[in-house]
Image (cartoon, rainbow, N blue to C red):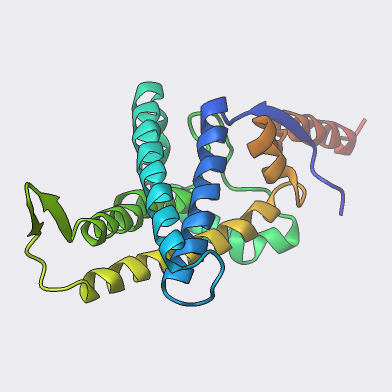
Length: 224
């Protein structure tokens, strides 16, 4: 099967790439220290792991704030508006089409870089999983806090439920990361999506080239 003709299009802005890699590094570090806090292994030591986990959490919250500001200033928030257009085609592409070298049902642009399925997943990540992680983490952090000369309580009966919610959110986030790592290998080449998040330029199918090819084939098929 002949490879599809592609062209490079500037898709990912500098801040977007900075945000992506910083977020990835913080998520992996939070997972690393978080599992140690749960006594999965001993790498940094419990107290050091807790301290670094908290520092990374504050950095993550700060990064979220910057990303929200950037998304609204640049109108990039529109990428996450759910749509059912091509949703079925996108699911079929991931299930079977990708293995048949079928054309991608959606085309990327700088203001439409997510396919319908990605829009739903990323929206759920941003309005459900990450907020759950942040809120439960802050509740865990400030369950008891200094107030004047004493220690006040937030009125939570215990940390068990908060810890379970925080851990459940962490596992969902890890599932997303694993699926994400697989999907980055499904571009025009195994490394094209990874390269795009480094350079900003992504290889997309060249519709114009394909149309010209089809026109040429039609002309050749016509009787002389």
